[in-house]
Image (cartoon, rainbow, N blue to C red; front, side, top):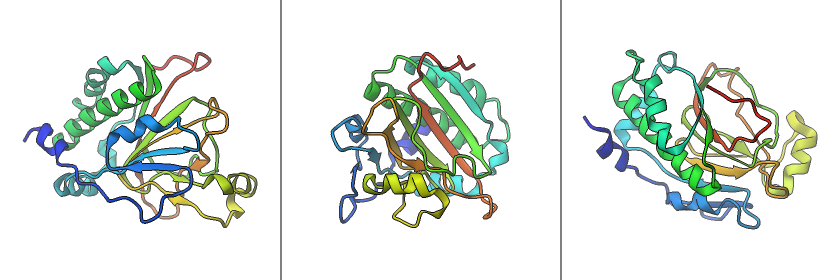
Length: 225
């Protein structure tokens, strides 16, 4: 079974009935290039995988998935990622191939959208409530997607000040990215456009997440290997 046909059989959700404040959403990956437009807080590619792939992710034992953290160029991303994932004999080989292909593709999309010759990539299994506080990121831009479990949550711009102040006591609107959806949003290095967001709380549920994050690095950040 090859990865290319599986990867191309995305199925996609339709657009929302009403657009959300600060969100540019599309079934096409080209929407990610619009993340710097005025009033855009989140560029959201609403994608899905084939039912077969989604079933494989639902059955995936996350203990079989290694953590991955590295700096890479788009040209080198596939090779660097495969060096780690292809060594994991317990990992479903179809999902290993898809994760290599998908992560490398998302690195390219992010690098093109942000003019980044090099990016910082993290693939990790999350089992706790880390990053559960509302915050903005200390970076120019970040891309996120969640393969397993609950996805990243965000607050509409009009409620951001209240959510940041109240944190756990905040009772206003909170939206969640769809599973497998890809979001690209600004950090603090782009004043006025940074997205207030958080990771979902999962510790009480006993569930875990498989999460991919791609950042544009800055010079003050230590080099990662």
